[in-house]
Structure formats: C-alpha cells, structure tokens
Length: 193
Length: 193
Image 1: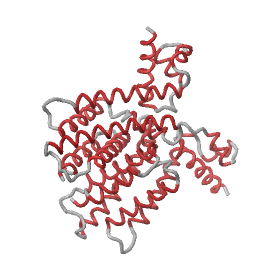
Image 2 (image 1 turned 45 degrees about the vertical axis):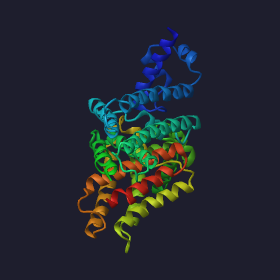
Image 3 (image 1 turned 90 degrees about the vertical axis):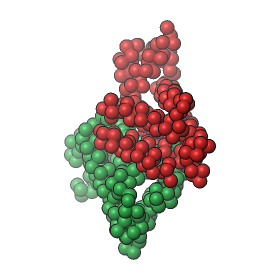
Image 4 (image 1 turned 180 degrees about the vertical axis):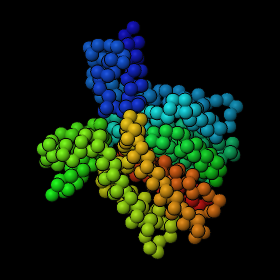
C-alpha cells in the first residue's frame, strides 16, 4: 500500500510537471491532485528536489521502455525500428494536442543551469538515449543499410538535438510540422547520404 | 529618464530570466537587481506577464540585430554568413560557461503550453528566424553554393530545430560538443548534399 501511494504521487506529479514545469509546480498542487496529505509526501520524499530527481527516473523509465520496445523489435530493419520509435511519439503528440514535449528535454532546459544534481542525472539520461540510437545505427551499418563512412556517435548526438528542438517548436506551433520535418530530413536525407 | 529606467528593468530582468526561467523568477528579485521600487515596475509594466512579453521583444531585438549583422555582411558567401552567425554564439557560450542557452527557445519550452500570449509571440520570433535562414539558403542557391534540389523552407525549419536542441544539450553537458556537432553535420554534410 505504501509503495502504491508513492507511485501514485509520482504519477500525479509527473502529469502536472510535464506540462507546467518543475518550478511552476507547487507541492500543494501535487498533493491536491494525488489526494494525499503533506505528511505522506514527506514520508516518501525528503524535499521537492528529491521528488524531482525521482521524477527523472519515472520519466526515463517510460522513455527507455518505449525505446526497448521499438529498438529491440524482431524482424524490423534497424532504421525502421528507429523511425517507428519517433513515429510512436509523433502519434502520441497528435492525440494529445501537442502538449508536454519531452519531459527530459524540458527539465534539461529548465534545470540544467540551476541545479547540479538535476543536471547530472538528466545528462546521464540523454547519454543513454544517444547510446541506444548509436547502437541502432551501428546495427544498420552491419546490415549495409547505412553508409559505413558515417560516424554513428556524431549522428546519434545530432538526432537527439534535432528531435529535442523539433519538440520545442511543436510547443509554440501546436502542430507536428517540425517533427515531421525532422523525420523527413533525418531518414530521407541524412541517413541516406 | 523614464525610458532609461524601463530599459534598465528589462536589462536586469533579462539577465535573471535568461538563466533561471520566467516562472522561477520573482518580480522582487528583478526589483532588487535593478534597484527600483515596486511602484516603478508597475508604472512601466501592468503585470508580470506584460513584463515577460516585453522581454521577448528585448531578447529578439538582440538576436535579430546579430542576424542582421552576420547575414547582411558584405563580401561573405551566404553559407559562410550563416556559419559565422552560429560561430559567434558558440564563442559567446564558451566564454560564458555554457549557461543560458537561447532565451527564445527557453521561453518556448517553458511557456508554450501554459500561456497563449507568450506562445504566439514566441512563434512569430521563431518564424522570423526561419525566414532569415531560408533567405540566406536561397541566396546560396542563387550563387550555386547550395543544391537547387534542396527545399530551403524544410531546411531552415530543421536548422532551427537542431540548433535549439544542441543548445539544450549544452545546458546539461556544460560544453559545446553538441553545438560543434550541429555545425559539422549541417555545414559539412546536410548543406553539401
């Protein structure tokens, strides 16, 4: 039961912070959404910062479970695996009014300059994303679907940058034109070169 | 004198909000930094929101003056003009401990989902950035420095995405590796294809 309460607070907090950001969200708002008293929150999290750090795990667990699902799919060509991963999020945003963007990117933008514990944890999540993308690109090279002349580490870093920036644009355009354009240029031009 | 006070409040507020974000910054903090009383602030800005909207103009005036400076330079090839623009910011961030990132991108990320007035104003700034980049790419096509087969509108949107995402990564890596990688892939691969 205690474990469920903690998971419930994280889930409710994640929804609010994904849309409003960490600093703009008060603990009281999370308590109200989760319908738990303040004492319960501080039983599980010693501070708002500690809660935020655990939220990074919450968000990244979701992202990496999606990456695992798509990048380890059977009988799919490596570049199609990667494209399917991004397509899943594109469809998700189209069904959810283009809000939220990437919670890891949001927190990196918001907290990177002002909190070192957040910054280091977020860096490790972005590093793991890039490693996963690089492995997929390497697999594509092994199957001769991608030029061996391309540097998969540079490419994976660049794919993560351009994905994050496309989601940032989505936040103000309220459409997925930039996200579709990211897919078009990455998959139809850059990875074909 | 009144005009100077207003400009001074905007300048002090811009410095704080560039690093901490809009929601995490209180009016009192801006008043303290500018050394002006509360009444003075509300004489020039009817609300914190109004102040934030005027800050978008403050930030974008700076960005567009830099764009004008580099993109209208005499006797420089169009793609070199664009590269010089990004190089200027790269040097700026290296001299300033990799903090802040793009204030327009930061506000887009932070405010796009929660305030329509901010969202629309930020969208128009990003649109103008993309138009400027597209014009520069068109000039490169006219001078046969860029393939006429490339779509400059798609490319300019993608360049803005990947630039914003590279700056986002800089916030957590505290180096310019992703920004340099953005330059390498855009100028040495994508625009050469």
